[in-house]
Amino acid sequence: MSYYRSPYSPQVGLGGRITPGVKALLIANLSVFIVQVLAWNFWGMGLEGLFGLRPAAVVHGLFLWQLVTYMFLHSTGWLTHLLLNMLMLWLFGTEVEKGWGTRLFVKYYFICGIGAGITTCLFNYPFYPDVTTIGASGAIFGVMLAYGLMFPNRQILFWFIFPMRAINFVLLCAGIEMYSLLSLQDGVAHLAHLGGMLSGYLYLKRVWRLKELWDGIVWRLRRRRFRVMRPDDENYPFH
Image (tube, rainbow, N blue to C red):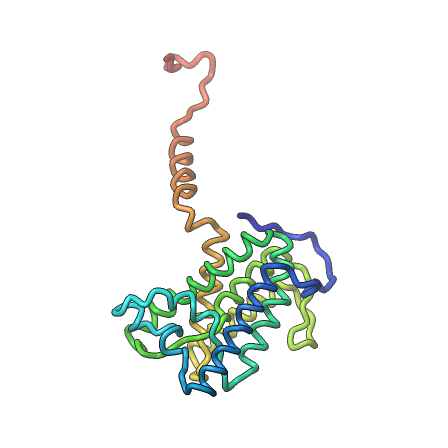
C-alpha cells in the first residue's frame, strides 16, 4: 500500500458520503455501545473487564483478543467519548478509504488499533498493569495521520475556527498528545493515541514488510559491488 500527496489546494475536504468501510465500523461501534448499555442497566454487568485492554490480562492471561475488542468499547457514562470518535472516523476515514479502497483501509485501521494496544501494554504493564483502556481513538489517530500524509495541503478548521493545513493539524495533535502524556493525569489514553499514529507511520513506511525491507537492503548491498569500467581498463573483469 502506498499513500500519495495531493497538489496544493486550499479547499476543505472532510467527511462527505459515508464509505462502506467507515459505515461498517460506525455500525459496529454503535452496536457494541448499545450492548454495553443494556448489559449494565439490565444485568449490572460491565464488558470492560473481559473485553477492555488490561496489560496484566494480556501478558499473564493471554487475553490476546483484548488487543482488538477494546477498540469497540466506549465509556457508557460519557457519551461524548463515542460521538467524538465516530465523528473523527467519518471526517477523516471517508477520504482515506476513497483513496485506498475498503479492504486496505479496514486493514490499516486494525493495524493502527492493534499497534496502539500493543504500545499501551508495553509501556503500561510495568507501572499500571491493571488499568483498563477502551476506545477507538488509537486507530482513529492512525487514520488522521494517513489523511495528513495523503492530503497535506487540505485546510482543516481547528476548533472549527482556525484554518490550518492538514499535515500541520496532525502534527499539532501529536504535540498535544505528547504534552498531555508527560504533564496531565486526565484519564485519557494519550499513549494509545500516539501508539496508533506510530503504528500507522511505520506501516506506511513499509517497516513491517520485512521481505520488502530485506530485499531493499540486499539490493543496496549488491549495487555497491557494481563498477563502471573504461574500455582501456586493464582489470576489466571477463566472465
